[in-house]
Structures are given as structure tokens and as C-alpha cells.
Length: 250
Image (cartoon, rainbow, N blue to C red; front, side, top):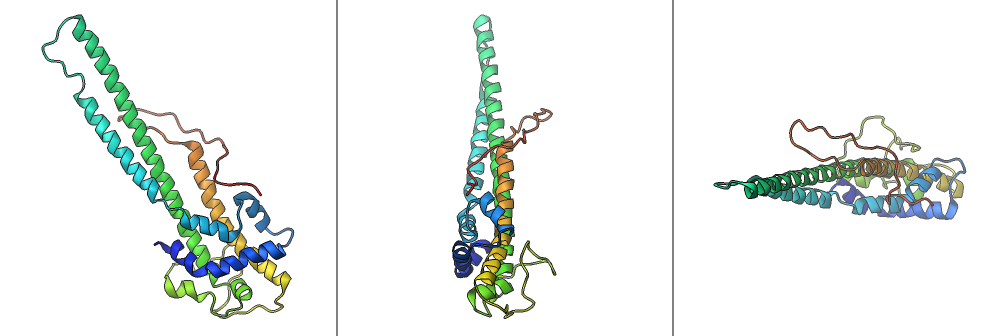
């Protein structure tokens, strides 16, 4: 269980309050949370829950299996076409067929290795996004906005007490005013302040989810690049935008 999974279990109540508040009271008309809601297609709690359940491990396992298949193919291609004592037209025809076979198998192995490298990159991107989201979740859990929404002065101590996550001194996430100390309170509690607090927390979390989805979109658009023999140059990947199923507009 990594940091995001652990933190999500201990902040599920806060995330549910954020989602309920946004669904019931909305947010200020010009708040950045609206754009992020449209881009990610999910409420903050749902988005974090989805990312928490999305493990990079299956991609890593698939990459390892593709590399094993590539090694097997390369071994087979190395043994193909070894002619001894053959002469004449039949031997020449067989040799041409064997050469084509070796070429095709080597190309297929390179394609497999390219797909494996692509899966590794997707896994690294997802793992990095989970780590960033975990840090954001730890920080909003200790914010004055979280205190306001939960009504519990110690609401933010869960992350700090159970997980030691390094956060740069003085760093801030978009739209979130961190509490000056544990137990900080906000005056004027009511629907307006609740809505603003939920929007600020939601924007901070959705920002990280959106960055992760965008980076994954870019990798999926670029696609895998075959890993060829030494000295073989491959055309650069096409990075033009393309639609994916990673986000749904509201």
C-alpha cells in the first residue's frame, strides 16, 4: 500500500464532505474548480478514489511479459536458416525464406520491446501522479478549509501522524490556503464559506489528477516506438492531440 492508498483510507470522510458540499452548494462562478471538473469529469473525491484504485503494477507486469516474448523470438530467429550441405536452387530458395523469416521475427521482437518500454513509461507516469496526488491530499487534509468542512480541529493530523511525506517549506497548491497551525479555524461558517472551502480543496486535488491524466494522454497519443538494432533510426513519434477515454466532459 503506497502513500496515496493509505491517505485515501484516512481522508475518505473529508473527501466525501467536499463532494457533498460541491454537489449541494456549488462553488463561486469564476472559481477554477469548474474548469477542472469539466476536464476530469469527476468530483474531487471520486477522482482521488479512482486514482487510488488505479495501480501501475499491471502495466509493469505486461511489460515484463512482452520482454520475455521478445527474448524468445530473438532466440528462435538466431537458430533459423542454418543450412549445412545444401546446394543449388532449393538451398537458395530456402535461404531467402529463412532470411525473410529472421527479418520479420527481429522486427516483431523490436515491436514487442517498444511496447514494453511504452508500458514502463505509462507506469512511471501513473506512479508519479499518484505520488503528487498523495502529497496534495496530505496538505489539504491539514488545511483550514478541511477544518471548516469537518468541524474537527485535528482533522489534518491524520496524514502528518501516520505518514511522513516530504513537502517543501512554504509550498502551496493552487487555491488552497494552508492552516497556520493544527487546529486553525475559520470564522463565518456557513454555506458560502463551506462552498468556497470545498472548491479550494477540490481544485487542489483535481489539479494533480488533471496533470496526471494529461501526461498519460500525451503518452498514449505518442504511442510506442520500436526498439531496433543498434544504429537503426526510427521516426519520431507523432505528438498530435488525440481523444482518449481517460476523461469525460461534464
